Image: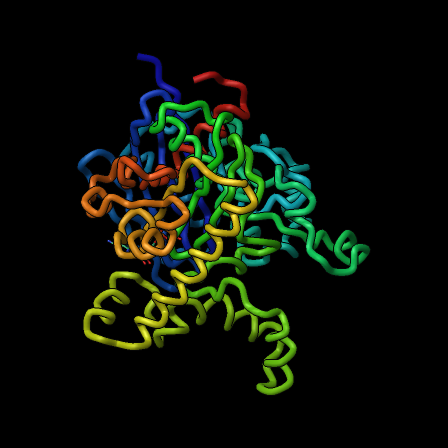
Length: 399
Ligand code: ADP
């Protein structure tokens, strides 16, 4: 049986996640996580099959994190000599990177130029890429961009109605994020339905801690809810999603907040956390709703209201859809969210089967009633596998 193992990295601001995946069998050979990068005491967890190994150590920066990862593979396997390529999740590709790209110095320079667009995400991505290239120089490294799937948005969808020259000068437009997940899930929907991806239209709801929704026409993304940054759109765990942009200036005037403070407020202490006094996890919010907490109930209602409005708007843009899918932590696990959304959308053809909705299988599955005009699905996302596949495709290996 041939194998095509790929090492994938997802370097966040304070963590590094990694996996070795064989794209032929989809088997995961190893997974790991380095946490609390930049703090005095960090940790690494490395899993291979049933075995879990941990290391506690100071991890001052991403370069140290990557050294620990390579050492973990040396100590506990599998042998990294087998991997055919390394894939890196890169958050912001701007207008330049519209597809998975083999990394050379010009790509690193390009990512560096884009730091202004993604000040939190691109720097750890770049450091991670450089450290990984030093540690594993013998194989190609590929950057897979969160924004790439949305490079197909038509101008009327990605253009903001602000001064055109200013927008062009600074690259201010909608880019979209979570693209790897939206691409993977929309493809999986086609597979589950046994249809050609190019033959039908669908809406994908990626509802995790961050949340976004996309309209996909014949496999091509035509609209999405995130923008220049991953802040707008749906209500999220700690991010506000859509808000009147006038709030910025108003808060500056009445509360004396500067732009950094507003940014922090809208990204870190808004969304469900802002509405509930700190709860961003839907399991905690559900428990509070069950106890009769009105703030938790309002937060849930605001979340559903926004999501329903987006689905309705994308339904209109697409002129009808064949499928609606839910993915990521909330989308895959929270049957109340799916039920509440579909209750509101039933008159538009989204009819849930309550029993199917209650099942938890970890597998892609249809949860709509047999008579539902739109097929509704739960599809577990697998960004690592999508990343590994994109990496293999970029280096020209057919798996
Ligand atoms: P991200 O990758 O954006 O950090 P995830 O997709 O892992 O987030 O989603 C995390 C969120 O999923 C949690 O904050 C929680 O709200 C939700 N979640 C996870 N498991 C469950 C569950 N069993 N029931 C309801 N919500 C869940």
